[in-house]
Length: 173
Image (cartoon, helix red, strand yellow):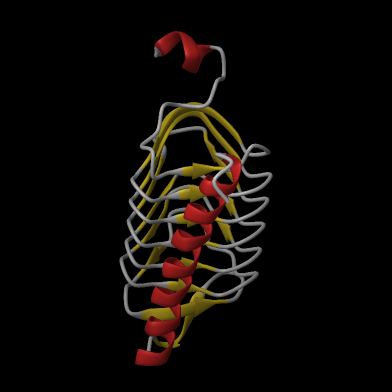
């Protein structure tokens, strides 16, 4: 409903999506099935859209703001608490750690872990299959089987949290 979007109302979303009542969503924001936007997040598509893939979780206090082409986040990805994201692309099956900053123009490939507190430089490309960290982010090592398994467990856990929150808010919990 264009009028609802113009009024700043939450977008119509798939029934499997969870958006916390304290989250603010403004502008053109698309949320894939099973995704969640948790407490006190601020997704503001000022210019370009924000597109979030299926089963992706955006954790508490994260701010995503577009001032250019927009933000696309792939499926099965975790965006940690207190993350700041500008216009960028984040691949599938990735994890953006707590307090990280993704600068405008950053392209993060599939299967990337960006460590807590790390920052990217504007326009930086993060190659897949690696743990990146630091300011600016650099490769710290390959993503081994244990790290990949942990990333899958986090996505599965937050999908379950989203289902539980939806049930509780619907009075079914």
